[in-house]
Image 1: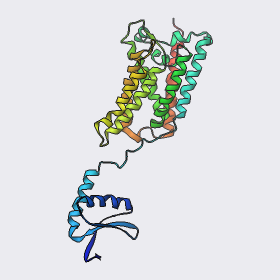
Image 2: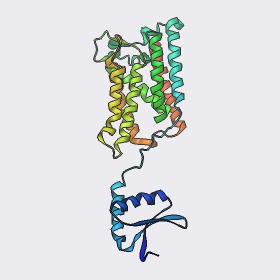
Image 3: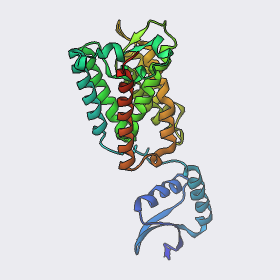
Image 4: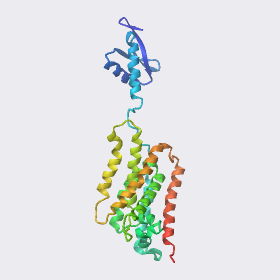
Length: 298
């Protein structure tokens, strides 16, 4: 084909006109004349024959430089709506205050379930779990319901409710367990806030690991963890009855879980059945822990 006495050579084809114009900008930057035209079922980018070799080299270099870049950051896959886990969380935190207040079944739920440093060290591991379901007063319950429900919702949408809440429960219990070893033997604590900050650490580490695989700035890669630490310092260190070290341990214990889920990506627990089984496993851990707590002691 010729145009004004010049022969035009097609150097790139695509079904997308936008792709052709994107590469045409590369040619425009080096001062090469070009045409973008429709041919049959696709679009063609053509240049003068005398410039063809140079323009192909420029497009090859452009492709090499941008092969690892994504035109837009991929959105995190939403595995589920996240509400199943939140509803379970709300149910547990709503039932336990009633049992506590009424000493249901003749049990002092607070004393048998709170995290007691000395007793945990002596082997009563279940207290690290049961303490997550107990609260001092209604204000404590409501604040944890709101914050925990919100953070748990985001975690459930990113990882799936089963995986998210199972990870949150385990990391929160580990946080309580480690916390028992850095305090005096008579130290006690209750509340789901340790698990809530575990949820925050889970989300931060998950987002951080996913960004590690992208060609982004160091600031962008570390932003999730930095943001998580800032939220931890803002929400988890105030108040006279706040167990700061428990919050920190909960956050830190969740980081390996979040990083592992981020590394495995969409291949981890991708089926609804697996998510349901993990959700049931989390519930089973709670039931077993309380069963140990309620066993008569000789």
